[in-house]
Image 1 (cartoon, rainbow, N blue to C red):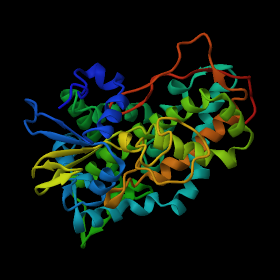
Image 2 (cartoon, rainbow, N blue to C red):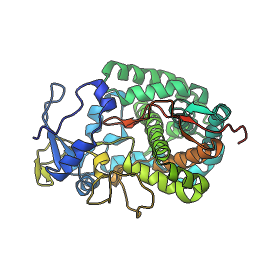
Image 3 (cartoon, rainbow, N blue to C red):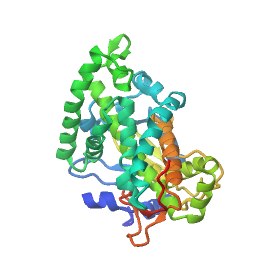
Image 4 (cartoon, helix red, strand yellow):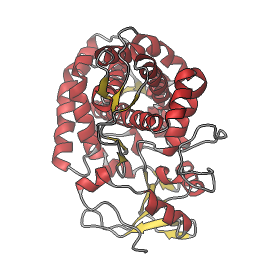
Length: 398
């Protein structure tokens, strides 16, 4: 393979890497990147870079199995719906799918989502300056998902730490396992309490749900929760930071969106999800000998679908590396596709719409702080800015 291709060589690089140049080179040449195995996993892995190939892999669940997720992240999360397929996957997905339908989320909008973002902004709006990552985006989605599941909001900071450490478990095994054990120890008394006294939250529904007449095992309950809490917190906070970065670095668009948020925010959200989604890859494994884009793939080979690359494929999107409003509506792969399409996509869109709307309304004349270092979106598997230092006109009224 070309010397243009390499994976991050250290933990620091995983959080600071800029992969788009490598992915663009792959799309223009080999299309599929092959990485030789390591001491941790001797198998050659294949990384899919182009949109058409990525869509095919994600839809063809029989050829490209999601079971590999049980190998990689399952050791930190437990029994995972992500690793299931076919009838088993449909059964367990349906247990929680209704809680994330757009119609059900309407009640969370008024009773949880908007109160959380307004409370966070109450502390920021009188100051005239803030780091939006530290004060808003890193706190907002984790509080929302805790509220939906039934976790006390005052404990959201601990869950945010556990979520990050579980997601980064493949890079920091001991820390990931410690976070997994810590989350379970915290959840155990809550699960037991819901068995005798359900409260109507998602945790109560999981405890009392059944599949084919049988209740979920404890391992499946904790597997669901270890997946839902990190997925509902970590990913949305990063993509919200990416959306704010895009607006702050396009002042004319920021002014246009601020003047008419109902018109423009849906486009801001979809364009950001396409341009800089927070999670850039989805893991699969070849169940049989196959090929992608003319590249032979042996059965048992890991296949990483690079959604961050496919959503910048020039064969599908004009000026694909640019963030710009006014694009024709086209499906992107930020939430995947096929049977494992992200359950939380409606919640993520709701949080982004409500959060961005509140920030633009409560923090007038929002702009980057000229005295702070310019923000940078970075990372390989997970992408977002570490800080967004801004200034704005002081506002004390919601």
